[in-house]
Image (cartoon, rainbow, N blue to C red):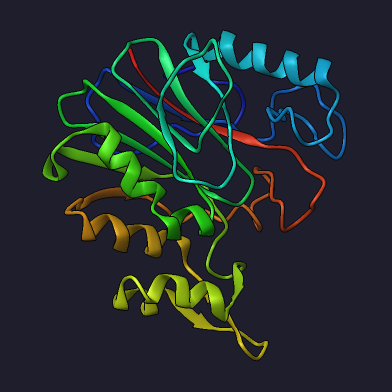
Length: 244
């Protein structure tokens, strides 16, 4: 994975050698402000020609076929298929060269693989999808024993920036009491600061998945990433995982 464009991120986790993964950043594309520069989202109002060029650059860099999704903040998981644009928020594959791909701009991208390097998956988890169980449905589709599953949590909005209402806290705490520890005090009455990484770890642990890596990013404060909360009119970066 050497020679990647600009400041793209390669996950630091003990995945098998044939499991490849990458997270793009804003750098390396042709889109103009406010989508500058490597916007990969076709649904945000950017010039379609620019998005097409950006996706071609991604393809030439990684040499795999991204399986794009029409994300709807749900929990549906499909087998990755580059030829179609399916409505789902996660995908999996056992076929080399096909990249499970999710786009985000504050939501949590989660990448999955098995210890033997035979299956991979990617999930898009905003708070709604996370609370509804998108990580769990992805685990079900991956069909790997919890102790043989590895997960990497990609760039999402950090706990210092993710202010939510009481209804968000209740959605998680009503399912897992320990989720209360993922919500801190806000300066605004009736509001909380949420740690989406901790919420994901709690839900994965409840399913027996202990090998969870990543986290620690903040798309809101880190200018390398698009952030919907920082600027509602913005692009999307991608998190991809595939088998070599």
